[in-house]
Image (cartoon, rainbow over all chains, first blue to last red; front, side, top):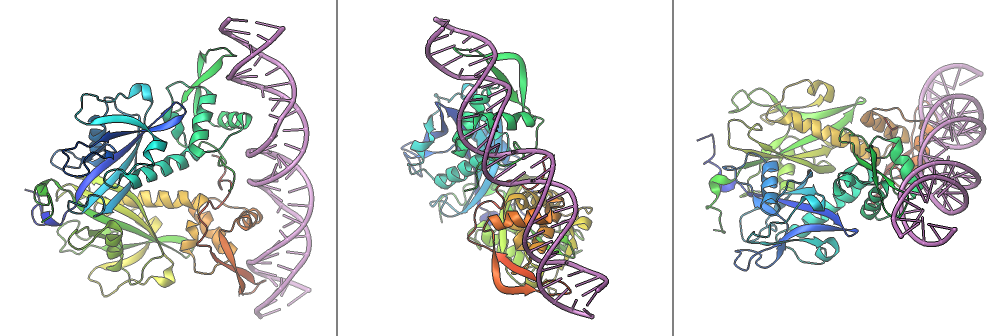
Length: 238
Length: 238
DNA sequence: GAAATAGTGTCTTTTAGACAATATCAC
DNA sequence: GTGATATTGTCTAAAAGACACTATTTC
């Protein structure tokens, strides 16, 4: 047995991870949640974000635990994952000992993430606006708030919004998801200029989205791009 | 005894907090470190960042633990503290069980933070550039890297650099610390214009820094300011 | 007055913002 | 051609960038 695994066993907190998985569908954000069973020992019948206990006998690190939490609720790996914040205190899980909750943000594209309907929990993609009005299990309201804040702020200056789109997308689609995230209308012409000045996205040559209009050039995320989306920030000073 | 405090005791990780306390002195950043004793069970004689074990029988949450870690090394509370990231894995403390390390950034102004020289550890403010070349205890190299990255990036668009200055400071001092943090020269005239357009700092009426030149108006941080430092980002697109 | 640094002004280039004009498709 | 939407262009206002100029102190 390794050093001090016994010595402090009663002094260690429970540690769990919680993921906030977002998709963008029908022009709005949706969040994956599950409904806790009526037989749950805590927070029965309440909605909760995908989560799991961080068990050091089974998992080597937090990222693994996060993937595990997602795997029990969805069938495909999500393309984007980012640690947000670690919450602590007895309010997280009042019936147990002091708990640490390491929160993650996950972004996915609807077509690539299927719910596991055979799971014992009811999982569903719920409209963000609906979810924000509900009282969630554990400290998941504050987790959701912080994830949302992070997502909105990163939409300003990184390529994060591309993770919510299909592999190939038009500039219009990118603009619309960005407008949603930063809650501000953007000038079409300006938006195109800004994007074209960076190599944040790459033209997919010869690929167009057709329809009852002039075909739209398709683009994909440039995974090599690590800098800022825009040389200047996007929103107007408030 | 609360629910499951025994049940999973062998499955919980050790949790610790680590703080990266910065000051700005002699035109450079310095970091508070201590030297681990030759009798330490792990990482003897190596430099380490202030840290402590998160003991749920003594501490209610992580912020408390962080203040505790600082209190054992310095005599005064630091004005700025921010959680950065939670590291996990067996590499953090190889001789013990899997460890979580919750990292914090702390900013202080030299005059207000005294080292505790009567402490059993050797504590000192070490030049960042010197420290970056050393092999530190635990995973403190990666912690330091990430703290630095956060500090640099926040210097771009928040008022974070004011926490490294005296309560009252001149615009020149603010510009110099900002230039250091973002590693770029800033135009004096432009810098003044930008600042004056926000209410990020407040003029301390009638207070001037005197010397062998025209007296310089003193300013202080506007704690009510929550927005961005600048309407546009500071650095040039790379 | 000289030295030193605070603070202001001026001019050019770049970016933002608004919106008009043109292009290319389905029908 | 008509309708729809992609894409480009044009004009004005605002901000950035470079640098010169003026102000106020100590000596």
